[in-house]
Amino acid sequence: MWLQSPQADVGSHGRRVVVHAWILVFLLIVPATVWGKSVEYERVFIDGVVYHTIRVDLSDPTVKVSPLLTARYPGGDEPAGRILRRYWPSAAVTGTEFCTVSLRPIGDLVIDGRLRHFGGMGKALAITPDNHVAFLSVPYGRKLDWAGFESVIAAGPTLIHAGKVSLSPASEGFTDPHVLGKAARVGAGVTSSGKLILIATNSPIYLRTLAHALRKLGCVEALNLDGGSSAALYYRGRWVLSPKRRLVNLLAVFENVPRDRRKAAEPTGDRPLAMARWQSEQAWELVQKARKLPVGDAKVDLLVRACELDTTNASFCLELAGVLETMGDRLAAGVSYAHASKRFREKGMVTEALKAARKGEQLAPQEAEVIMELGRAARVSGYADLARETLGRGRALSLLQPLPQSKSASLESVAKAIRQVTKGPEPPHYLLAGTISGNTLSAGNLGLYVHLPPSWDWLPVSQPASAVANRRYMPWLMHFAVVGVPANAGLNFIYQEYVRNTMLITDTPVPTIFGDAVAVRFSAQAMAGEEPARYTITLAKRGSLLLIVTAAAEDRWWVQAEEEFREVLKGTAFVRPLFGLGLDLLCWPPSYCTALSSWPSPPRWSARCSAAGL
Image (cartoon, rainbow, N blue to C red; front, side, top):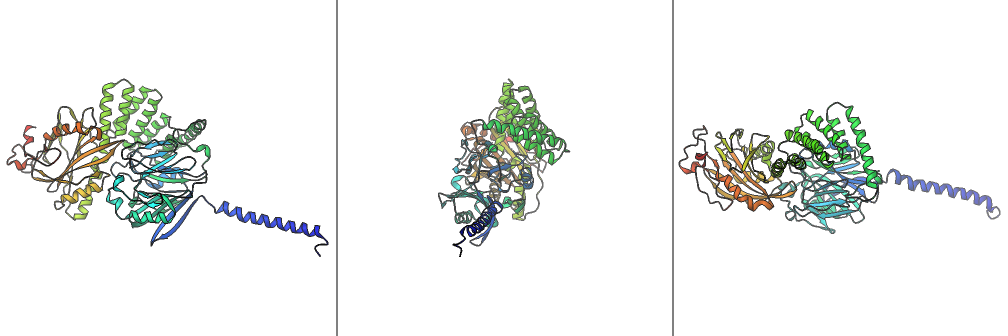
């Protein structure tokens, strides 16, 4: 029958085919638009452990992965929620590990093609503006060329390499028990198909367990990120896992980022000019919004973003510094003045640069970055003596960054941890509130006396629990700190707690004869700013008093610095105060006097009364 009227039937059939085709297209396309996201969250069970994962499709050119820093960088942390509210990413996890003392990340961080932080260790996740991924090892203390990469975050240790589980934390410089033991974990890996996997769990697991989980998710390269109390995972407006502490950095994922907003290190062509113009316009709009707000965190957030967008405008940094100073945040204000000085200096405005740098030094006299900028500004302004003195002092101050005694709060946290484990009584709160006369420090209440050689100076300190001496014009430093600990705390346990609260790579402690005090001495390595540094640390315990003496120098200066350290120690005495009055003029028998003249080891000590010559 249909053969006799083919045209009518074919027409109606054709219409049905067209309708069905459109329905099929709708069913295929619409779900891809609505549900086919490039950034997806999934909760998975692997070997009995619950993991929260974010899968990022890097084949989407509008996806961007980037580290985020706190507004108080360097040297400050912040609630993670505040960092996210400045940028509003689609997803984020905890970033690289950071020193709990200096609050500086351990690894390199590149943001929008610019090296924002040098760490010089670990394994780096590096991504180009075209979302090509590389996992690169960072030799300890080595500065790598990140040209061509838009985003870099170095953390570690390595979990997977070339498709196989690969764990060798010690060879990469990771010895902290917090990293090696059981802890909540965060990691990042990439699959053979180019998918980025971000994973987190609040279950305490070992590194190997996390590595196997990432391998089962298809990762061929993977690294460990910061975990423990820092472990966090955020997805589309809510915390799936929220951090239990303030953070220093995050690793974030953005969607719908235009191609002309992507930037690699050392780019070429016309795009950088267009990018710079757009960033300058955006920064100006943010500053205008900030000026309408009262002094507070919201105003600071807008100004921080403006300074990050326009990296040439010094006035934005000055405005931010003024707001932070009004809020009483002296450290952050000092750093902002230093940033303004750098921008003035790069434009040849040397008078303005020196003025801003001096203001920064007044507010943050112990911040290495601030003092170094003062030295550079003084050098271009023609003040050679000031430049030489401040550059040496700045490099020396950077040696303090890995040490818990560089901040009294961090040192007290070590003592608190010791008290909690030993369940000892609360010891007195000791203060190194000595008097300085010329080159001599006298702290009779503690029985500590230090006489410096003529080439050394005492540096101003921001807390009363320590004293810092610097070899003039050189990056060599001696640090003396005291803290109260329970009398029943063993020195080996104190050593373990000390190391656990630092990012130091240490050797085995050596028992030391230290007059009437029990002591151990050990060597350590760490990054001091951008340079690898060496430390020799002595922990001396007498009753409830713990004395920490640290000698520090950059690696390349260590051999020359050792003789200077001996000279400082020859003028150092740690004696038992006579009748509790701090009188130490009579040091007999010799066991009541302590000399540090044996340097560095083996511990061949001669008791002497160096205090008599003070």
